[in-house]
Image 1 (cartoon, rainbow, N blue to C red):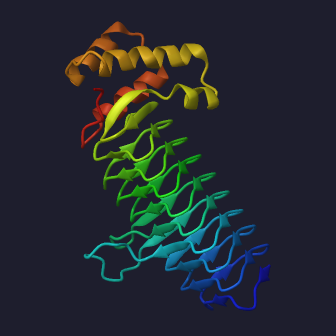
Image 2 (cartoon, one colour; image 1 turned 90 degrees about the horizontal axis):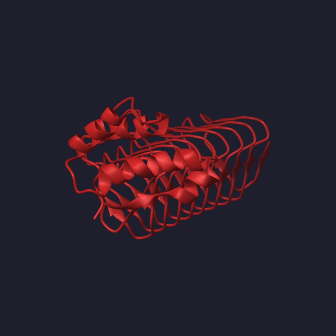
Length: 257
């Protein structure tokens, strides 16, 4: 374990072996940091925060601070970060707001500079948040999602696996799996490049695109479109996951033009 002499570490913190802590880092409260994690200069970790193994925490990041919620009164809430995440400069990840609740970040995620993860968000694995991306409270993001620079995601929104939000876009509706969204919750098509990079073969992508045409290109009622796909009996596991995501939406999903 290497701790710079200027770092300030709370006696209540639990720091495992092979952790590197740089100059002027402040760790305040019962923070737990597992082995192999590096915390660079001027980062601030606080509250009931748990950091997994082999994470990179860059200068100025703020992890586990109180939620930006007027109803929060200092109760014990949590931030739980998994393994192998890269958290760049001045990223902010706030802990939960309801007593006993948590903000959760999975594994192998890349949070670029100044991105913000609000209270009680749940992030899966292999996510990229580009610079300035903002997630409101209670946002849920699936696996292998790409949220481009300066995107805004409204509180309680869900974003499905392998979705992509183009730069400067925003959404107050759920973003379906496999989709590309831009402007204001406008669905443009299937994230074909992302699917290929994730190992989807041509047949799987072809079935997903066919489902998207029925759901989002005919201007039909979504319930009728879902019924049509189900009655055809051609839905593979990917399409079944897409249909289940739409059926379970409470905010409604992004739609095509």
